[in-house]
Image (cartoon, rainbow, N blue to C red; front, side):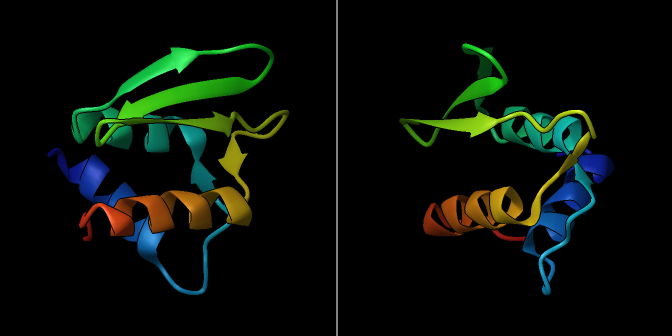
Length: 84
C-alpha cells in the first residue's frame, strides 16, 4: 500500500470523524485494498470489495466526503478487519 493510501486509511479512522477526506483518495484506498470501483447512475459509485458490493454517493459540488460517509467507510473496513 502506498504512503498516501495509508494516510487516507488513518484519516478514515480518525476520531472525531473527519469531514475533509477527498473522495478520490477514498476510491484510491478501495483500489489499493483490492477493490473495484464502478460508475453507477447519477453520482452513485459502486464498490466491490471483500466479496460484496456497496454503493456510495460521490460528493458534489465539493470534493470532500461528508462525515456520515467517512463513518460508513470506516465501519465497513473495520468489519472486514482493516485498520491503520
